[in-house]
Image 1 (cartoon, rainbow, N blue to C red):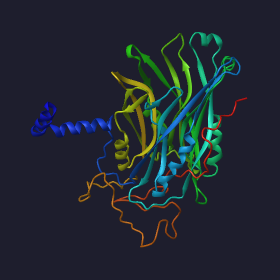
Image 2 (image 1 turned 90 degrees about the vertical axis):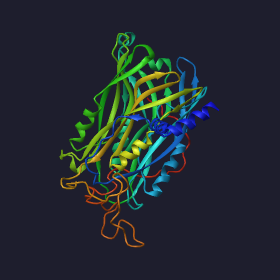
Image 3 (image 1 turned 135 degrees about the vertical axis):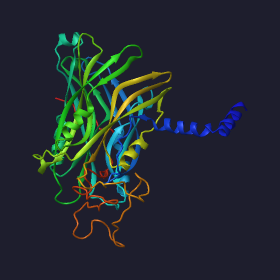
Image 4 (image 1 turned 45 degrees about the horizontal axis):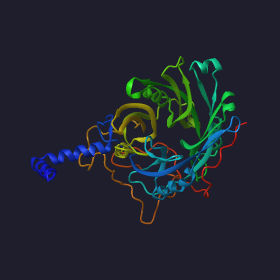
Length: 448
């Protein structure tokens, strides 16, 4: 009864609305300010779509000096058919990542949500000529430090990336475009003798490609950049601090005409030694550029990084997120920003009673608009500054893009005072998973 009186009093006093707004803000989550435009962006803007699937992993352990090992299987492959559904509405995959910090944990099994982020241009017809291809791969860590270094805490795990590199080289020659690289949850730990010999763990990872269905596709070249990130564990509460100039690495390659595709933790790490609480973890940055423009260093994209404070609520055998980043990603898409990748960082910023907050980074990029496309003054009578633009180019009744004489994948310019998109749509990768169902979590090959 007292709580009812309090709610009525707050409503009469006008406080109920502010409390509702505060609750909505907490539900969205805290993040650094979004970049503001002086005028509405005249280029292509995007609608976003999100698909979340729950992936189950099951662990098994066998004991023995030689034969002893631990293996973890995953049913992620059986979930990929769902990623093809948004393509029927004209959406394409931008990234596919495990949602960090949340899920369900059992005695020998766990369940983790994975999220796919899809986009399509606002006001564009439902059409594209791409399909998704998911290739199974793996990476293995190898200890490169000597025995004395290991005993003093100066470990150095180096990851063999040859499987991913060969995979990208094979499919980019066919016009495929890399969309994402993500760990599947599969893992094999070698026996004790294998660890002494330098062999570490084998991790399953899937490589997502957008394969063209049209003829004479544009070919792209990929560059992999290894960026060490310093990790330091601080004092009481076991807070974790991450040191890296993310924006400097990002803009360095954007200014040379490259486009960021993904960032991937390859499980490689190096300890600073003497039982230090700090070390370097290796991140792999994937950049792409049209093969015919390798000598052209003119920038095509601008970039920005949004820091998101990801708070999870700790419970019995389950953790839940207290915020939601989808409104932030959606708003950025409405402003013309493409999501390059979502990067989980080990940085823990706050530990409270029953909850933990750590940092997640979102990398966005947007095509640079040629001079003269921005209006000299804010246009009048445009409903909704960042709402869906009007579509002045409407196909004739019964017609569909591309029309006669237009290239495959063509979309008309959008909005008022819009400039034609450079390269047509899609400007990047798109596609659906069309392969026949595969056995869940196939065994990883043994390394020789």
